[in-house]
Length: 329
Image (cartoon, rainbow, N blue to C red; front, side, top):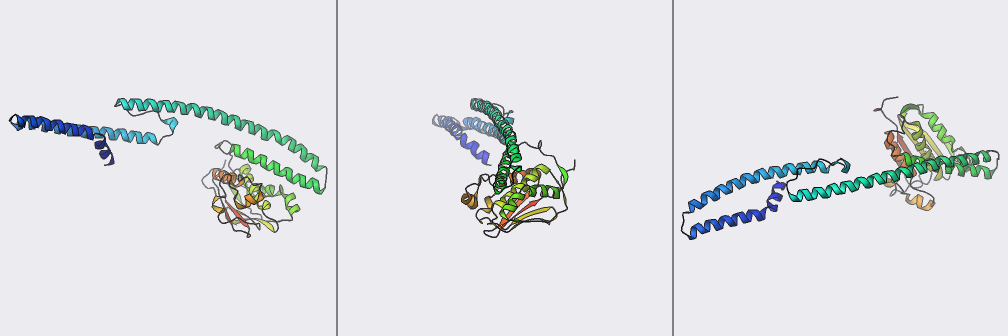
């Protein structure tokens, strides 16, 4: 119905002119005292033919509208089969669209090349910087002092940031960087927690780890990154007390702490990129990238991650690991 209203609105001038000409034609017969039937008959035939033409034209326009609606749902790079040219306006508009599509394709090609160059550069940088980090770690292992242990913790923080860079670069790699297998969860948790042993000792934070004795269908490397990031955040915002790692329900891993918690107004946005919230603004060092990466990675793995927290009452992060729709390799 809407398209009919628009159709007659666009052609109202032509319809008005038709009736004006018909009125002039009939008036001429009337003024010259000629039989009006001789004029009314051809006018009636013209009205009937015009009505049939309008019906045919409406169906044609409706078909064109349907075609354009289908095309509008397609990505720009797939827009090829445009409707048949009916008017000079159609020809001009299609020429403009084709010109814009060519320009867009060129811009997309240029941006793809630039993006790939950037990814390659930072990937090489991240791998190259691991060499001096490893050399510094070997040097610090020869010393046993408060300063060397503190430097080792800071060096581990640098390694973690490098891994975050690599994870960020690989997020959009699709399925190429994911290998799903049935994995024992306990070794993944233990290896992740072991990396922070020095920080647990230095900050005097207790680790309460209950073996989960569970197998999950996941990618070991990416899940390890998520668990490490959650433990790192728990250590960062826990001044005293403990961090507990346990299986809350089947396939639901829970990592809870007794830290400063998260403000209620920040909870809905903690997984947004670059959002640091109240804790991040007071800490001055938060990047707002860690939890964003965790959420993106869990989405890619088919897992789900949630956070429950309140100020001064600690934080609980739950990772739902149930994946029954994948086949084991």
